[in-house]
Length: 85
Length: 355
Image 1 (tube, helix red, strand yellow):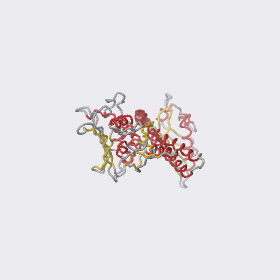
Image 2 (cartoon, each protein chain N blue to C red):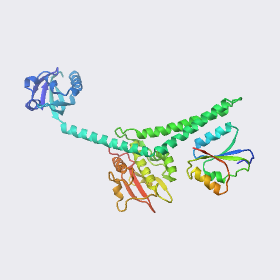
Image 3 (cartoon, each protein chain N blue to C red):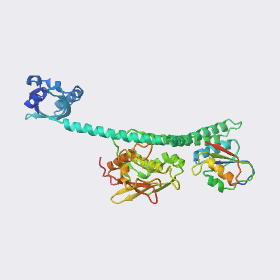
Image 4 (cartoon, one colour):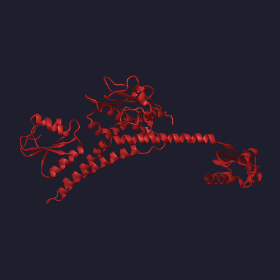
């Protein structure tokens, strides 16, 4: 993972096709993205300090997107979340 | 009952039992009078076969309904062989009429029973799919969402001031992949839904079947936070089986396993195993960590209409057992340790399958 201060959009979606599609769309908008299959992978990665935002699938496998939002808020991760259905 | 006919096919003689059966006089039976007693629906086929035998001199054989003196029809097997002179020319035909009504009835009864079973099995598949509707629509929605997004992306690259063909091409490739996955899912569903024609026997890779059914169940498994384990033996011999029927057995067992865990706290684990067993058999097991079997009555779950589900028909396991048995195998249930149920079935791998 590149350390950069450019705005980064994190995408978590357990479906590989959806993940690739969202990443492609954001790329066409000139946005830098990092994609993850699971919330665990996302939590393990080094996140840059710059402005960032998270696109999250509501129906994730191991934990629902909404639960994850609550958990991450409780554990001090503060990031704006856009839910995708 | 017996008759004889001239080389042109016209009746020369009929015996007493036939006269009694048909209720027609000897005179009425002569010539082409015999055609009067044949069921109108069977007449065309009977005549064309009879004419063919008269032309070629080959023995005649046909099944047709014949009307008796009371106006009722019964199935008869009609046979005739030619008598030839020393030059090989047909001089006469000798024939018999055998009442096969009982055999025919039994055949029809069997066919009706087979259809009833196929209808029930189909009903069971439809109801399973109904149960999965929410999960399946999600599963189908994913590639469609991806396709729409990828097509949008493609347009964006193309309509920029400086179109980027390479990026547009990549987005199009992704769109194709999305469409393919949606189509594959629909194909799987369709083949599973298909109404049961007579059972088809083909060489089937059981592991592949398990994987195919798991694709359909993936969202359902996710939805109830179930941990899925597969332990499929490599290089498993193929079995001669009806593909859709085996899919149905697997689907029944896996959906039952999922259902049994929906209300359970603690670990929810669905395990599917395949392995070689003794005597050229292979064994497939589906275990769950759900509510388990009724104590002391494990085998009761295979009885028709036995169900513990609020929406169940109680036919799934009954149908599954008869499918496995029609493939020469066995399906049984046992308690899973420390909790839950364990279903196993065997299939023969030597191709010796009762039809």
